[in-house]
Image (cartoon, rainbow, N blue to C red; front, top):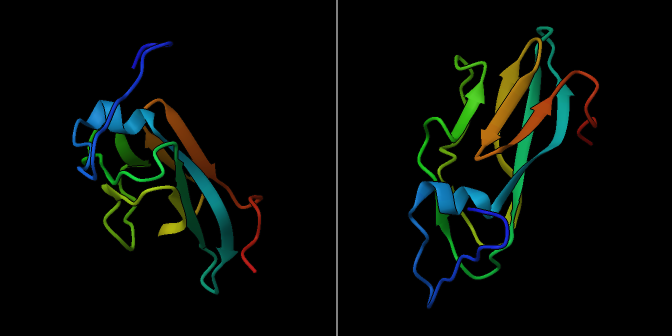
Length: 115
């Protein structure tokens, strides 16, 4: 979406255009916990600027984990209105990034620890 443009949605229909939907979302690292085997688990969440509209952003170039070999505990292509603090988790050793549109959230060993 270009600066100054708007995304209009009517009713409760989900936005299904990946690039438009991704513009409404901001990924975030909620927390990271250390595992007994020396790996770390990142909890990722997101916020949405559309408080009443579910969004769909298919996994692919604008909705992916990096490194690509990372697996998540949940499918992360369906996004609830307003957002979630714990949308999914992934285990990493060196770091994990969630790329969503033109925004990236990166978890490291130094990220906020989970309670």
